[in-house]
Length: 248
Image (cartoon, rainbow, N blue to C red; front, side, top):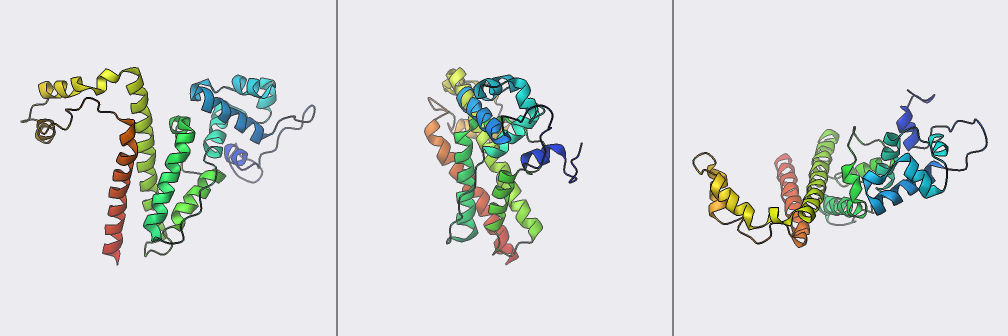
Protein backbone atom coordinates (compact mmCIF):
# COMPACT_ATOMS: atom_id res chain seq x y z
CA UNK A 1 0.00 0.00 0.00
CA UNK A 2 1.31 3.43 -0.99
CA UNK A 3 0.27 7.00 -0.38
CA UNK A 4 -0.40 9.54 -3.10
CA UNK A 5 3.19 10.74 -2.75
CA UNK A 6 4.45 7.27 -3.65
CA UNK A 7 5.86 6.42 -0.21
CA UNK A 8 4.95 3.16 1.53
CA UNK A 9 2.23 3.76 4.10
CA UNK A 10 4.45 3.00 7.09
CA UNK A 11 7.18 5.38 5.89
CA UNK A 12 4.64 8.13 5.33
CA UNK A 13 3.43 7.54 8.88
CA UNK A 14 6.96 7.97 10.30
CA UNK A 15 7.33 11.32 8.56
CA UNK A 16 3.85 12.59 9.42
CA UNK A 17 2.77 12.45 5.78
CA UNK A 18 -0.12 10.03 6.14
CA UNK A 19 -3.49 11.65 6.48
CA UNK A 20 -5.83 10.55 9.26
CA UNK A 21 -9.23 9.36 8.02
CA UNK A 22 -11.74 12.16 8.30
CA UNK A 23 -14.73 10.02 9.24
CA UNK A 24 -16.64 10.94 12.36
CA UNK A 25 -15.69 13.60 14.85
CA UNK A 26 -12.42 15.47 14.88
CA UNK A 27 -9.56 13.24 16.15
CA UNK A 28 -8.65 13.90 19.78
CA UNK A 29 -5.19 12.31 19.52
CA UNK A 30 -2.03 12.89 17.53
CA UNK A 31 0.63 10.48 16.33
CA UNK A 32 3.14 12.16 18.63
CA UNK A 33 0.94 11.69 21.69
CA UNK A 34 0.37 8.03 20.89
CA UNK A 35 4.07 7.42 20.34
CA UNK A 36 5.08 9.16 23.57
CA UNK A 37 2.53 7.16 25.55
CA UNK A 38 3.80 3.90 24.05
CA UNK A 39 7.38 4.82 24.98
CA UNK A 40 6.26 5.61 28.52
CA UNK A 41 4.69 2.16 28.81
CA UNK A 42 7.78 0.44 27.40
CA UNK A 43 10.13 2.39 29.68
CA UNK A 44 8.10 1.52 32.76
CA UNK A 45 6.90 -2.01 32.00
CA UNK A 46 9.00 -3.39 29.14
CA UNK A 47 8.30 -3.94 25.48
CA UNK A 48 6.08 -6.93 26.18
CA UNK A 49 3.58 -4.66 27.92
CA UNK A 50 3.04 -2.53 24.84
CA UNK A 51 -0.25 -3.13 23.09
CA UNK A 52 -2.79 -0.90 21.43
CA UNK A 53 -5.13 -1.41 24.39
CA UNK A 54 -2.45 -0.63 26.98
CA UNK A 55 -1.37 2.53 25.18
CA UNK A 56 -4.99 3.62 24.89
CA UNK A 57 -5.32 3.10 28.64
CA UNK A 58 -2.18 5.21 29.19
CA UNK A 59 -3.81 8.00 27.19
CA UNK A 60 -7.21 7.62 28.82
CA UNK A 61 -8.77 6.96 25.45
CA UNK A 62 -10.37 4.15 23.51
CA UNK A 63 -8.41 1.58 21.57
CA UNK A 64 -10.40 2.39 18.45
CA UNK A 65 -9.28 6.01 18.71
CA UNK A 66 -5.66 4.79 18.30
CA UNK A 67 -6.53 2.75 15.23
CA UNK A 68 -7.64 5.91 13.44
CA UNK A 69 -3.97 6.95 13.45
CA UNK A 70 -1.94 3.74 13.82
CA UNK A 71 -3.18 0.64 12.05
CA UNK A 72 -1.27 -2.05 13.94
CA UNK A 73 1.17 -2.77 16.72
CA UNK A 74 3.89 -3.20 14.09
CA UNK A 75 3.36 0.38 12.98
CA UNK A 76 3.42 1.51 16.59
CA UNK A 77 6.75 -0.26 17.18
CA UNK A 78 8.27 1.49 14.16
CA UNK A 79 7.13 4.85 15.51
CA UNK A 80 8.57 4.05 18.92
CA UNK A 81 11.91 2.82 17.55
CA UNK A 82 12.42 6.05 15.63
CA UNK A 83 11.15 8.52 18.22
CA UNK A 84 13.18 6.95 21.04
CA UNK A 85 16.40 7.85 19.20
CA UNK A 86 15.78 11.56 19.82
CA UNK A 87 18.34 13.83 18.06
CA UNK A 88 22.05 13.06 17.59
CA UNK A 89 24.47 15.29 19.51
CA UNK A 90 26.62 17.88 17.72
CA UNK A 91 29.81 16.27 16.54
CA UNK A 92 33.11 17.59 18.01
CA UNK A 93 34.81 20.38 16.07
CA UNK A 94 38.25 18.85 16.66
CA UNK A 95 39.65 15.34 16.78
CA UNK A 96 38.67 14.31 13.28
CA UNK A 97 36.61 11.33 12.21
CA UNK A 98 37.73 9.13 15.13
CA UNK A 99 36.53 11.55 17.82
CA UNK A 100 33.28 11.97 15.92
CA UNK A 101 32.56 8.26 15.56
CA UNK A 102 33.55 7.64 19.18
CA UNK A 103 31.05 10.24 20.39
CA UNK A 104 28.45 8.92 17.98
CA UNK A 105 28.80 5.31 19.11
CA UNK A 106 28.72 6.20 22.81
CA UNK A 107 25.68 8.42 22.23
CA UNK A 108 23.83 5.55 20.56
CA UNK A 109 24.75 3.39 23.56
CA UNK A 110 23.37 5.99 26.00
CA UNK A 111 20.16 6.28 24.00
CA UNK A 112 19.58 2.54 24.17
CA UNK A 113 20.31 2.54 27.89
CA UNK A 114 17.56 5.10 28.38
CA UNK A 115 15.24 2.87 26.37
CA UNK A 116 16.62 -0.69 26.66
CA UNK A 117 13.55 -2.17 24.98
CA UNK A 118 14.70 -0.60 21.68
CA UNK A 119 17.21 -3.39 21.20
CA UNK A 120 14.35 -5.92 21.20
CA UNK A 121 12.47 -4.35 18.28
CA UNK A 122 13.28 -6.40 15.14
CA UNK A 123 15.04 -4.57 12.31
CA UNK A 124 12.94 -4.88 9.15
CA UNK A 125 15.12 -2.86 6.80
CA UNK A 126 17.57 0.02 6.49
CA UNK A 127 16.84 3.25 8.40
CA UNK A 128 14.03 5.39 6.99
CA UNK A 129 12.55 7.27 9.97
CA UNK A 130 13.50 10.94 10.49
CA UNK A 131 15.45 10.36 13.71
CA UNK A 132 17.30 7.31 12.42
CA UNK A 133 18.23 9.09 9.21
CA UNK A 134 19.50 12.06 11.25
CA UNK A 135 21.82 9.68 13.15
CA UNK A 136 22.92 8.08 9.87
CA UNK A 137 23.72 11.49 8.40
CA UNK A 138 25.59 12.51 11.55
CA UNK A 139 27.89 9.48 11.39
CA UNK A 140 28.50 9.90 7.67
CA UNK A 141 29.35 13.55 8.27
CA UNK A 142 32.25 12.62 10.54
CA UNK A 143 33.92 10.99 7.52
CA UNK A 144 33.50 13.99 5.21
CA UNK A 145 37.19 14.93 5.24
CA UNK A 146 38.49 11.40 4.64
CA UNK A 147 39.49 10.02 1.23
CA UNK A 148 36.74 7.41 1.42
CA UNK A 149 34.18 7.15 -1.36
CA UNK A 150 30.53 7.69 -0.43
CA UNK A 151 29.98 3.93 -0.66
CA UNK A 152 32.91 3.27 1.67
CA UNK A 153 31.58 5.79 4.19
CA UNK A 154 28.30 3.91 4.27
CA UNK A 155 30.20 0.65 4.80
CA UNK A 156 32.15 2.11 7.75
CA UNK A 157 29.00 3.47 9.40
CA UNK A 158 26.96 0.31 8.87
CA UNK A 159 29.80 -1.80 10.27
CA UNK A 160 29.99 0.43 13.33
CA UNK A 161 26.23 0.30 13.76
CA UNK A 162 26.34 -3.49 13.59
CA UNK A 163 28.98 -3.54 16.33
CA UNK A 164 27.06 -1.11 18.56
CA UNK A 165 23.72 -2.86 18.17
CA UNK A 166 25.32 -6.25 18.75
CA UNK A 167 27.03 -5.06 21.94
CA UNK A 168 23.83 -3.44 23.20
CA UNK A 169 21.68 -6.48 22.57
CA UNK A 170 24.23 -8.98 23.91
CA UNK A 171 24.79 -6.94 27.06
CA UNK A 172 21.06 -6.56 27.69
CA UNK A 173 20.41 -10.28 27.28
CA UNK A 174 23.35 -11.24 29.47
CA UNK A 175 22.17 -8.86 32.18
CA UNK A 176 18.70 -10.42 32.13
CA UNK A 177 20.14 -13.94 32.17
CA UNK A 178 22.39 -13.06 35.09
CA UNK A 179 19.42 -11.77 37.07
CA UNK A 180 17.53 -14.99 36.39
CA UNK A 181 20.40 -17.43 36.96
CA UNK A 182 23.61 -15.94 38.41
CA UNK A 183 25.02 -19.43 39.03
CA UNK A 184 25.43 -19.90 35.27
CA UNK A 185 28.03 -17.13 35.31
CA UNK A 186 29.95 -18.49 38.28
CA UNK A 187 32.76 -21.02 38.76
CA UNK A 188 30.53 -23.83 37.48
CA UNK A 189 31.06 -22.53 33.93
CA UNK A 190 34.85 -22.90 34.16
CA UNK A 191 34.49 -26.36 35.70
CA UNK A 192 32.19 -27.44 32.87
CA UNK A 193 34.62 -26.17 30.25
CA UNK A 194 37.51 -28.08 31.82
CA UNK A 195 35.45 -31.27 31.59
CA UNK A 196 34.09 -30.67 28.08
CA UNK A 197 36.86 -28.96 26.12
CA UNK A 198 39.24 -31.43 24.50
CA UNK A 199 42.39 -29.46 23.59
CA UNK A 200 43.02 -31.85 20.67
CA UNK A 201 39.70 -30.90 19.05
CA UNK A 202 39.40 -27.33 20.36
CA UNK A 203 43.02 -26.24 20.76
CA UNK A 204 42.52 -22.46 20.85
CA UNK A 205 39.70 -22.67 23.39
CA UNK A 206 41.71 -25.22 25.34
CA UNK A 207 44.55 -22.72 25.74
CA UNK A 208 42.10 -20.10 27.01
CA UNK A 209 40.66 -22.52 29.55
CA UNK A 210 44.13 -23.61 30.70
CA UNK A 211 45.13 -19.96 31.12
CA UNK A 212 42.34 -19.61 33.68
CA UNK A 213 40.51 -16.86 31.76
CA UNK A 214 37.15 -18.17 33.00
CA UNK A 215 38.28 -18.96 36.54
CA UNK A 216 36.44 -16.04 38.09
CA UNK A 217 33.80 -15.89 40.80
CA UNK A 218 31.51 -13.92 38.48
CA UNK A 219 31.91 -13.80 34.70
CA UNK A 220 29.30 -11.07 34.37
CA UNK A 221 30.17 -7.76 36.00
CA UNK A 222 28.09 -4.73 35.15
CA UNK A 223 31.09 -2.56 35.95
CA UNK A 224 33.02 -4.15 33.06
CA UNK A 225 30.38 -3.37 30.44
CA UNK A 226 31.69 0.10 29.57
CA UNK A 227 35.29 -1.09 29.45
CA UNK A 228 34.36 -3.98 27.16
CA UNK A 229 32.44 -1.64 24.87
CA UNK A 230 35.34 0.83 24.73
CA UNK A 231 37.77 -2.00 23.95
CA UNK A 232 35.67 -3.34 21.10
CA UNK A 233 35.01 0.14 19.74
CA UNK A 234 38.72 0.92 19.80
CA UNK A 235 39.50 -2.25 17.84
CA UNK A 236 36.91 -1.36 15.20
CA UNK A 237 38.18 2.20 14.83
CA UNK A 238 41.78 0.94 14.67
CA UNK A 239 40.67 -1.13 11.69
CA UNK A 240 39.15 1.94 10.02
CA UNK A 241 42.34 3.88 10.70
CA UNK A 242 44.45 1.14 9.13
CA UNK A 243 42.19 1.11 6.08
CA UNK A 244 42.48 4.88 5.75
CA UNK A 245 46.25 4.66 6.07
CA UNK A 246 46.31 2.16 3.24
CA UNK A 247 44.18 4.44 1.10
CA UNK A 248 46.49 7.39 1.79
